[in-house]
Image: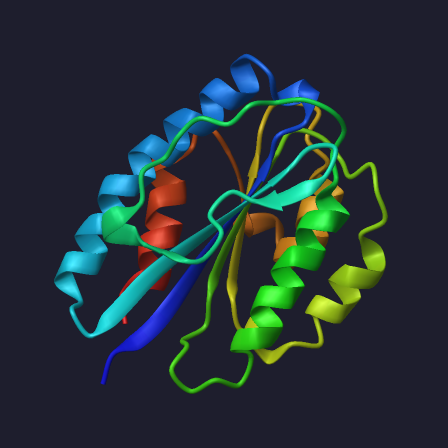
Length: 183
């Protein structure tokens, strides 16, 4: 029986990410992709799917559905606007609610990358996320980009300071991801 493992990448695409922020994020993602593909090839009974949400002025699915890790190609994102992190959490909640208590889905991996703090309301949706079993059991990793990243909000999402990394910690990020993906 094939089991599904969802990986959700929530990416800050606000104007403050332009330049070095997006370049740092691109570097992290480009280093993670081969490792994800390696994990997938070593576990044929687990289907790794990735869904990407970008959040700038609004939050949007970059990948309309979960894409197989084998077929996923990272394409740099455009930065503009504010930081609709609350909107991204709403989209995540909708998707996780569909998967919650579905026996074919393993606990997801949630990655969030941001260089600032939310410019919209996020607290209520975050509280709703905490009510979902698969969010509670998910591995949640944050990538704080730059010195102005809102580490307090990232801590609220991940539940731990030890799950917040910076872009210069690529090896630690990859290790945290891989530790969660091998079933």
